[in-house]
Image: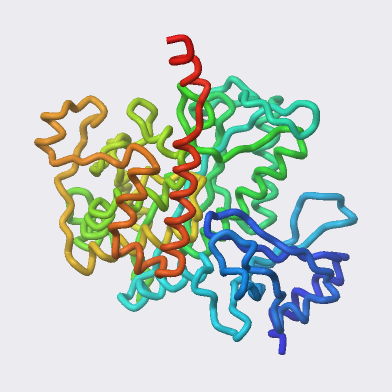
Length: 447
């Protein structure tokens, strides 16, 4: 039997002439997957789901156990705002099940939901507010992408007649139509780099919004013959793109911010300090999840406003975790900003890992080291040692080694996904390691 909400969706599709609905989910690496069905089959999809071959999806099942079922989540239904006005499509995000009706343990959405249930058992709701940066590149001869920024703007530059401003404006309208509460948009530091921020929400809803956001930005850019990329470091010598994530815990029983203490110097509770302590403790292992590609570690280098050192502070944007300043009357905004995730991560796995490491800090009352309010990039080895400051892994290979040692993250992802994720990342690192690059040819060929 379909629910009243599902009946309302079917009715809306009929009344608005929506003939196709895309059923979406993401694979282990965060790549969007989907299948389109005619709306005539929507009731059947709500009742029984839609079967597909899981063995062809990264991180899913083996070929002899390939049958999987995508079950649409009615709460995620939206009408996509792009495309011809007379041929609009609907969109539903799906949960993945095994044929016998059990949630698939490798479904990233299921992994995040399960981790959020752990937080709820402790009385908390986990909220996140990510800031995804992206580049707009030129194209030529149709789909060919030119690795050259579309504009030469810098931080907060604005021109009402510039095509990149048009894209941000159109993307903002599209995201609002998709139910994403956009707070602001602006040009970022590097040429061709932009950011559109949306309001925080519970982590599952936010992860859904991240997937929606990336799809929307790419679609709007393509309609203007530009290419939007969320690659962490597409151009050498300029700032890369991050996904700084603002995090907070709220008490489930009364809706108050569990991080806020008016009497503390930093306006933080013990819960907040322990949460930060847990994330700092597990940061090196967490890096393989939140900064998951070879290219991620080209961004995490000194001098480009991306963190390298494992420390925290308030006004210090070189720190791994920053606690934004408190403003009177803004208790709900008390939060910890994790600054080393990037947009190439799977948001469901990233948020699950962020939450689990923070909860480990709370359960074990992990005290973070003293805050650092100086530019850590200026520290020498002696000063780093004085503050007991460690560094993030310098490569994906190093990050994988740290991840393999983490029982906590293995428990978070589950053995099924943990093993497949490490295998995929080892293959990626080995493929990269064996490449012969232009830099090597220029450096060594005529030596």
